[in-house]
Amino acid sequence: MKKLLIFFIVFTFTINIKSQEIGLSPTKVWTDNSEIQSPFGFSIYYFQPIWKLGLKVEFLTATNERNYYGYLSSGFVANPEDIIIDDVISKSRIQSLEFSLSIPKIIYVEKNYFTLSLGMAGDNFSGERLGLNSGKRVALVKESKFGYFYGISISREKIFQLPIKIELLFKHKGLIGGMYVTDAIQPFKGELDIKELQLNISYVFN
Image (cartoon, rainbow, N blue to C red; front, side, top):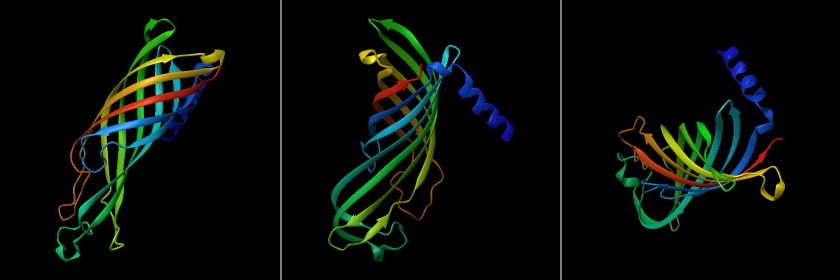
């Protein structure tokens, strides 16, 4: 297994080196989860052409903050005596590691081209809540999820005649739920539907 991993790394970094990309992207995320809601964050990524396809590895982190007046508990349903009512600040975070294969430049129009991609993702959700009056701090139950996504993007290269590429990317991701702790409040449980809009800015190695 170790030899296979080493081979994959060497193979990836030695194919078509002149077209490799490293990029950074501000990212807006929309979810159907009431806790994480629609966070904003950024991603960093590496893109490697492989023959007529492209391999992309990406790490995303995004955070959301919401305020509400209501129940603040220790997270365990079995301890109702720990539940208080307070003004609450709830902060949640999503971190995602994604791998995708793309078909670049399937449509080319006026120096802009469209790309389609398919990938898989592993996402981690975490957060905490703070009672403003009580000062009580509660860590939310962490959860990991896995799923698949597709992406559609439009790009332009050689911005101002520099080795810079700008890309507007839309992704739609479906995540399946993991195992649940039955006696704990889990705001991230269940399947999640996620949409992302990214403005990718990358350096293309010549």
